[in-house]
Image (cartoon, rainbow, N blue to C red; front, side, top):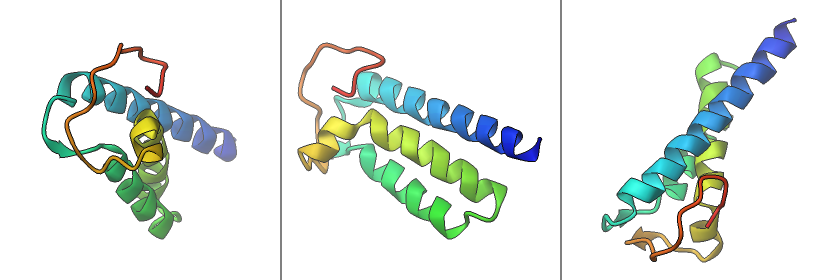
Amino acid sequence: MNILLIITISLIGTFVGFAIGRFGDKYGGHLNAPHHWIYGLVLIVVGIIYIHNWIGMLSLSFGVGHFVSDLDDFLHMRIWGVDEPHEWKFWSIK
């Protein structure tokens, strides 16, 4: 039962991180700021360090979702700047 709760909370945290990242991409993509995959990577590192605590597990799952939501910018190593104009789709990484 305990493992089922951990998996459920982790999946919810991952989805929430992805959703916030996608909406941030749409409404904050015009800002000249760091791309949000960097914040996801920082949360993943924090989650790995504190993996034995709930906050570490939530940080890890939220960070993975946030990182994946901006995967295209990571693959092209875009670190800082305005996002290129593109058709916005919630489930797309572009």
